[in-house]
Length: 340
Image (cartoon, rainbow, N blue to C red; front, side, top):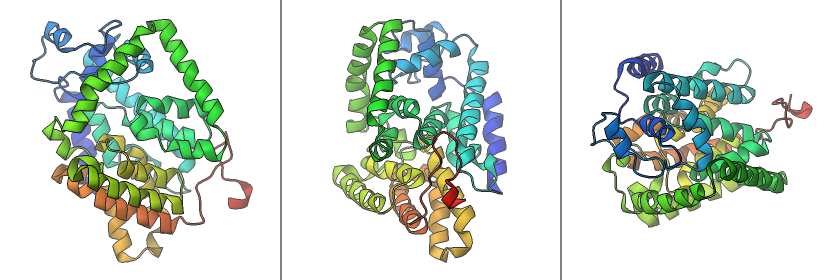
């Protein structure tokens, strides 16, 4: 019963809460920054009368600028609401073919990760949709996941398995060429310089204390050695059974960098598992599944809780879905005849 209450609170905050300083404000400011979104946005924020204490930082690859330019056409709050509505719609459409008959599909867009994504105004719903489309055979979406490579890198497993790597690379080159043609090649140089100077140092030095209550990957809480241990354990489990759900969960054990709002696919995967296999789960497996579904909210107690829970949840996923891979006819979203 907690989901409807949290949904009401967060959506009310979306309409009435202060948007300045949320992650979305950086997207909106970047759309007003012309061809220099990787310069400090603090000056532009000051011109808009925003407080200087907030962090305004845009660290996304140049293709995202096509979206930020469109967002900049609208005032801040309408842009924020349009951004969230578009993300929810796209994720809902991407999730539909993965939902078993009778599964409440609305859960896909009101999971803990989805609600947090909407509150921050982040990209989790978009990257989650790209992930789901990519695992159904879209090479364009696989290439587009490069906008968050630390979240989308395990799609490479499906690309290799299905011999789709050359086509995905072709789409990636096309995206780079189009972006360079529209914004100039220097935009890519600015991007790489900014990522190394800001994002890289932020991850290594753990610059932002608030990340200890938002990050769901093991590096920040357990250090390099702990991260390596979780990454190895997650990789070994993934090797037992790799599909769209297990790869999504393993991402947050293998990647050094990821947040609660990046996890809509993980939440959906555990929701589907609970729906399909609940009666066959042991009591401790049910606990692990429920906790794993709730990780985006539980991380507010500290990033240390996320990795052990996700590792346990991944163990359940690989056991319960063993021999039952999530596969769909390419381009249709339907199960192959042998599985129907």
